[in-house]
Length: 377
Ligand SMILES: Cc1ncc(COP(=O)(O)O)c(C=O)c1O
Image: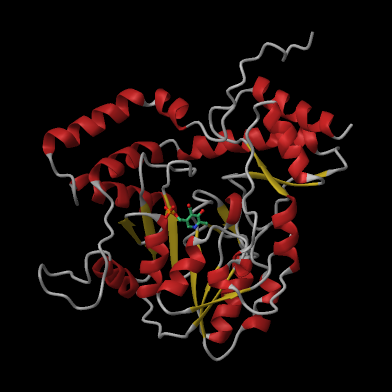
């Protein structure tokens, strides 16, 4: 009988509870401290977390906010763009990026991805630039960076802003051709992130943050997240209410200390999958560019016969995800007539993301890999 026959099958895509158990006392105490203090909004811990995250990222300003969608919206609002201005981004991502562009009366312009990294193909950006283009929003999808050096040089040439959507790659490093490195999210004019619970640095609820090295932009962002105000009951611009609450900040402040280890644990899981799946001719394992590390928010394969493989895994109680089944340019609110983005459309048909998190063990990983390899025999 196979050693896996009696295995309790409770494999999860993400195990937020298992991860919590390791830091339970510290987290519980931090929450209790806030409950006893009562500074639920804008407490000292929010500033402390922002300070610690700024040191970790080596960036001048971190402005916490309510979630990763708000982070992109507020970043765009700080640039004082006009209705109808164009923002170049990727169609192969979570909807938030394009949604806030459209919400602000701006126009998302989708440029195709590079099929190796699933990220915006920097070499196709210039062809999409018009006199209305004002900003580029690359998304560092699944945990590795878009080609920032090229994107920044295009932005400089055409006088464009760059906002990095770093919801999926916090802690990953970008290597420049002059041998220097920076953390992703700190290269463009503004970086944004989400601390959604399943993210590499996940809160226990909604949370997000915005990063910048630009003092003027930071000042505007601080006002925008606070109803357009830096002086109580005086409003200098239209803003929003987007705050990180103290309980989430306390949780994130503890988890930030573990982020590097969490990312290492994900890289080990990815290495295991790579070794077991690399010789399967029906599968393409994730490819890593030479300019960015990969922190594997997702471990995403390109596979043959994707839907049947997913069914086969489900029968074995192995969860998997399709991020993303339809590229954004094909959804009703974002339809652009006759736009064909072949790589994004191809990826949407063939991607499959496997379970990856900090709590996975070898038995689970072997079981998943054996099940995949057997499917193709
Ligand atoms: C790439 C990307 N951008 C933006 C978001 C939005 O973040 P949130 O769910 O915190 O609003 C997410 C996550 O969910 C994301 O993956």
